[in-house]
Length: 296
Ligand code: GUN
Image (tube, rainbow, N blue to C red):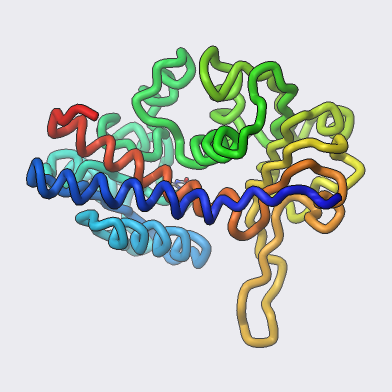
């Protein structure tokens, strides 16, 4: 029997409806509007498309949303000044600097400049540290989306063998950290594979939950998956264009093979991607409430 599809797009729609109602309530009862700024430096087409999707969702939910595009040759100093002004802006509760940045800009320095209370990506070292000790204020968006999808689909995480393929700061490391914490939606035994792992297949085949964020199209083949496993495909790889110019996207998992072996799998597109954006909105609503001292 083919695997059950974990349709993040549908779950994300439900959560967004809840958030929209929350935003309306914040406006009506407290006179506040969640504010999100997304800063994009340069013209990377993939980044432009991600940022557009984030801004569209922010608009749809009724946020005060600002898209700040800066040219590719923006200096590090100018970007730091810009962040400093948004840190002080009371209408802005969330600041997101789209990564990657041009090479002349030090990414860590930029992330460090964002007020941790407005760091809705949860990339600031303070937020990374809080996550590490199991006391996060904000969860990083893609890992939070993955965890939410697992929980809402009724996947047993406690005691499960989880293998994560990829060790990025954005996905691999934080999702590993989140799933091994004590508490609800966690308590897993986690293995992280990377480019120097000797036998990736050995580890992926042991996984009850396999999370793939390798950045390589169709890296995980069907024979690397344990029958019945839950497979979360974080990859979005453009592998070509259709005759009418539309992008052809593939995940990091060979879907047609995997769907015959896994118990459940996220599609690409329509799996993890929409969850990531929704978690960003959730973090921004939370930041707005914290900033205005509004209790849940
Ligand atoms: N680039 C790729 N993913 C992300 C993300 O989640 N946040 C930011 N700021 N940049 C990214």
